[in-house]
Amino acid sequence: MGRRLLLTFLQTLMTVFAASIVLFALIRLAPGDPAKLLIGRTMEIALDERTYAKMLGEMRTEMGLTGSWFSQYLSWAGSLLRMDLGTSFYTQRAVAAEIGERLPATFLLAGTALLIQVGIGLLIGMLSALHAGTLLDTLVRLGCVLLASVPGFVIGLLLLLALAVKLELYAIGSEAGLSRLWLPALTLGLLGAPQMIRVVRANLLSELGQVYVQSALSRGLGTRRVVGHAMRNVLLSTITLIGLSLTASISGAVVIESIFAWPGLGEYALNGILHKDYPALQGYALVTVLSVVGIHLTVEALYVWLDPRITRRKKEAAHE
Amino acid sequence: MNSRRGSHTLVFGMVMLVLLAVPIFAAPWLSLDDPLAMNAGARLARPSLEHPLGTDRFGRDLLTRTLHGGRTTLLSCGLALGSALAVGMLLGALAGMFHGSWFDIVLMRIIDVLLAFPFMVFAMVIAALFGTSLFHLLLAVVILWWVNFARLTRSIVLNTRKSTSVDAAFVLGISPLRILLKELLPQAFGPVLVLATFELGHLILAIAALSFLGLGSQPPSPEWGSMLADGRAHFMTTPHVLLGPALFIVLTVLAFNCIGEGLRDRIDPYEKHRI
Image (cartoon, rainbow over all chains, first blue to last red; front, side, top):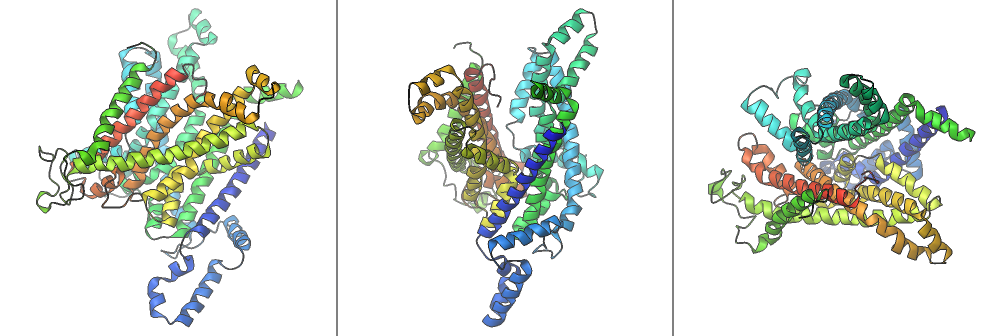
């Protein structure tokens, strides 16, 4: 068990390392000189050529843009390890601090959305599986296909129109607290729900066909308790999907945060694009990559921990 | 109509796609208004007989713009996904054929790295560094989206390679390239087609979301995503400005999802290759 996890962990480290190279290369490939961008066009016009060239040189040294690509990467990666993501071009503040301020909001949003999504998925998926083949089941499946075809921002805007403008149940201008959280979280949760419902339905149906369910039922155990046992196994098989949904929520939160003006990472990244703030965007990309691989690793570990068969199978294979 | 599983869904999706595609691709020859013609007298007009979907803030007819924009959206998404599919199938087939070789190992590590980047995030980085345009978004699609096709093709080629008939072909001295093209790749066509249909739907949604954030096609050219971005500011007072593009996106993606479901049931009734 430990070896398997250690191997996955090392592989994850390699992935993060390679991803940082990709990001570094992208920034170097981008057209335009970041040092020039930071000094600004006005300075270039206002100053005489020699002063400007001197200023540019100083700025390059300060930003770590001198020397070979290799040494530039090494110094950049070194500062990353010290949690230094550079300074924002736009606000002149440390990117790590700015991201740190916004990370909780995005995690709160994505986490709440996940709870809503899992709740809807388990409830509707179970109902649909227990009434497989009936009108209810057909309606649920149709609803899932339809919901999966609607862009997230359309759902968000419709909910906003209905609940904030028409019914006035939601105040968009209020303080960014719990009263502001529920609508964006509901939107994000609804987006991931169809997939969850389908997986729970399919897994529960296949679980109910298993011998242990049949034998429990034939011995007169109540349906409720049997379904309860089956649901435990269904939960186990949805862990992968839960992990995938969480990463989808973290990256998909950009649109939802933009619609609901939720002060999270996505909004920060959009501002970064607007102001051509490379360090901000680089920081955002790195943090999302880290969350993605982190979630992936957690899912892997949970699997090994929750399902002893995985470890046992490995052991048996080793003995043969 | 035959009663095979999925055929109703498939037919429904196909009919819907044709009904959407015909007016979209025939738009230049239909006697519609100019999609760029402004009309200051009819700004933000509500849907009427003259303008079935209303007009935008410049008085441009939204039905015309939606139909014209559909061509850009569908063609560009189709082209980008097609390129990703070709790249993915080629690399995946080679990796499956030469399983365990350095090529396979390196490719799988590259795929691991690319999987760590969510598409939205990668597209945002590209848009920020290289500028906001539809072309750059599509570039991001080709860079990231081949991965799924490569993984699927690789696993199918790998599984098929173990069969006795392929062993026999090797023993008979048939060249590996010929075996790959004649025996192994055809097995992948069905599942890849199913995956591509679903992915096209996902892609249209993702491009729409990015364009909605202002990172896609730029005004004044009509494109579904940029029309949504354009109408966003007036949505609260005149919600109909988003009706046209939003409705067409939903119907198109729905059509692709139905086709995908139908095809999956038909090609792969036992869901051997879980997609």
